[in-house]
Length: 294
Image (cartoon, rainbow, N blue to C red):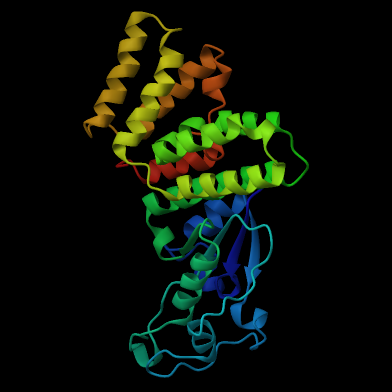
C-alpha cells in the first residue's frame, strides 16, 4: 500500500518550490514523490475561509491564525500517513512574521493527531529529519493496510513480528507493552485491541531511535543471523555493530551487512524485519547516502 501524505497546496502549486529546484523540496519532488500519493490540502478552503491567504499584517496575523488560536482544528482527509506543511516565511517587506498561520496549523494538527508524522518542507531539507519522517510514514501505511479490512489475531501477530526490531529500536518499554497486547489479542474484542495497538505503535515510532537502542536491536538481529555464519563472518558482523556503538561507523554499515547475510542464509524472520528494510530499497539508499552520520 502506497503511503498517503497530506501536503499544503501552496507547496504543490508553487513550481519554484516543488519542482525540485529548491533544496528544501528536492526530497519531496524527486525522491519521496515516486513512492507516495500526495493529498493536496488548503487549510483556509477546508475551514470555509476561502482558498487564498489574506494579506499579512506585520504581526503575521490572519483569520486562519485567529481561527486556529481559538482552539479549532481544520478537518483533514481521512487515511493520511503523514503531512507536510509549508515552513514559516518572512512577512511583508522581509519582516519576520511572529505567528505564521502554517506554523499554528502544524501545531494544531499535531495536537489533534498525535501519531501523525507532521513536518515542514524546510525541516525535510535535513537528511536525518527526512529519514525519520519517511520511516514513520511507511510504517503508518503498513499499519493502515492491516486495519483497513477485517483482521484476525494471527494477522496482528504477523504484522507485529515483522515490526518487532523496529519498535524495539524506538521504544523498548512499548515494545514489551505491544508484545503483551498481541499475546492477548485472541481473548479481547478486536476494536479494543486495534485501538490500543495503534496507540502503542504510534507512540513508539514517534520516539527517537538512539544509538544505544539501535545497537540493542542490531544485537537482537545478530542472534538470529550469527548462528548461521562461520566464525570469521560472525566476528565481522559483530565488529561492525560494536564500531557503530562507538560512533566509528554510520548506521547503514551494520544494517546492510545484517540484511545481506539474512537474505543469503534464507533467514526469513530477519530478512522480513522492517527494521532492516523500513522503506523501499532505492529510497533507503538515497537517504543513507545523504546522511552517513546517523
